[in-house]
Length: 188
Image (tube, rainbow, N blue to C red):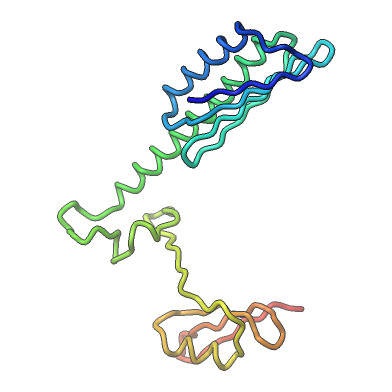
């Protein structure tokens, strides 16, 4: 891990550098993949401020702490980052565990989730085992009401959200239980 130091109104001594690097190495055990860290140390009258930013693979954590002792500020700022790292790791592990409980048995062979839903499409798992699935298959250009209705009739979807070409407002065309189409437009 590459560590850089910046001192404002302060000369960064080798002892301070060594202390910060040792604490950051401990952090590296908690969260792997850390590439670099930037430590900014500031003194203003009796205040000693440590701001630490840690960067890694798809990772950016920061902690700022102010005390009357620079070593205390550094230690507490790194403790904050360590807490963020642990929380992030628990969140990933927890979501992985929740996801494995709802996947089909290992012998299914197709590598997809329930009912043919790909794992990359699942955004969240709701109460009762329901999945929230990302669907990027929607019209990106404004269209008329007639075009939206024809598009809905041509698909198996229950509704279609579209932007009206004339008014530029968002509307929803949906299938009613009686077989006809319904329209929802927000009030202007």
